[in-house]
Image 1 (cartoon, rainbow, N blue to C red):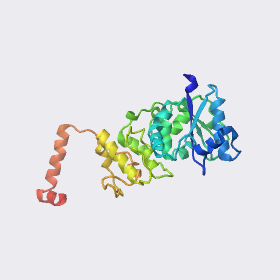
Image 2: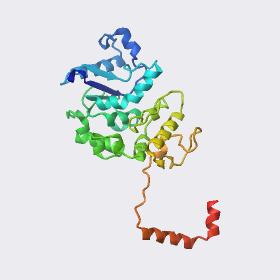
Image 3: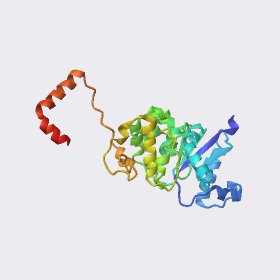
Length: 283
């Protein structure tokens, strides 16, 4: 039913954002004072309500989650991908006048939020459409889709019709490898939906949260390329990296070889190394 459709708000947090408790004290966003952060939230609600479809429901991660209740917070993080996926629209606010989509895409959560959302519209700091692009869905705008695809290093089709099973494990880790989060655990929790993970989000774990996610990915997919990396390891598990940055390079995939080609290569190596040299190298 159209009445129950909702719009999601995607933005960069700026200082002390409004919480659920703050909004409940006033009981209406329209009664909030005229501070810049309050105006940002109020303008989002206005854009959602005054749109062609006249949405009655709008959701912002700042004030629509009870972050003081750990069980509710954990369930919200697990459900985030689905909420964006099932939303009627997602409005993206680029607060900085110098913002472009490349800078916006450095935030950890934006990967999941962008790929999950079916309809997205980008707005500049003055709430004008990004690039003055009037497309109803900016994921279908040739210019914006190309800019997003270039910033992410993916095919344009990935932007418009993503499903978690569409990309391999290493490719999704590569997409996440250049992103940052203010809260360290969010590097892992922002990927729960993309990897269809069932880990339970808990804070105060530090980088161990990333270890839990990577272990879960291996257990669910059987993809052991997760442990093919070089760099600093987690104290929690030395087989796992301390940072996703180790996955930033596209993994080399050698061209397929015919059986006789493989036999030739093995024979060449056998002729170059003695058994003693090979054993010494191995041990």
